[in-house]
Length: 254
Image (cartoon, rainbow, N blue to C red):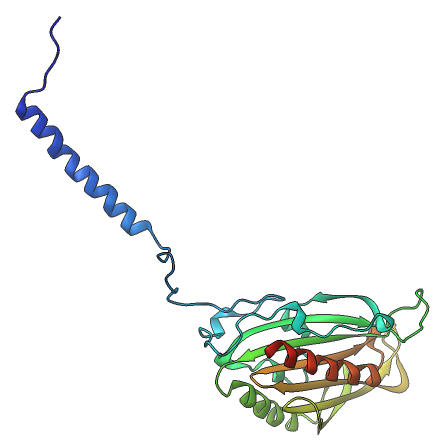
């Protein structure tokens, strides 16, 4: 039996036919590969947010000296006797307070990361059957450059232009003052509004709650106290949370 042996011309044609095929595979691989080579630095490092979402389009690539990740351990934790339920992550836009406008959401492009958590508190020794006394939302921003100081400066200007606001249909007022001994600089706002019942009817009294903003180096934290179901917040617990929270951020940044 004879065996088929390709002629030299046939072998040459086979090799030539493979050349465009191999070149096409190599070109396709080069066009579809989007990963950076092992060990290389990505061309654009978006900020990583551990505890909540943020708007990455507003944030530049983080600098080496500014944290781009905010861990859960950077947030304040209530002592057991004041904790009604475990702290939870919260969307930043829901945690930030609003007065006359978007005063607290003006971090700008110098923000490298943001995250928020909420603690639900009770009075010490309160029966387990009692409803919570309130919630405190905490937001942490990290900035590059002088962004943290600039945020506080813009916020002071915005708050001074908002001595009164609409509080869910009721007139509200805002008092702002410096909060000494907290972080590198801090601001305390007290909101007062006409108290209403659970049915939305005015009781004839007033309710109050507080907002605190503190800068710790290149980080800013915002605390937003909300009494349960529209009632007043607890300024004593709020003061403890502010000071404990600032110390926690300071320890995280070291």
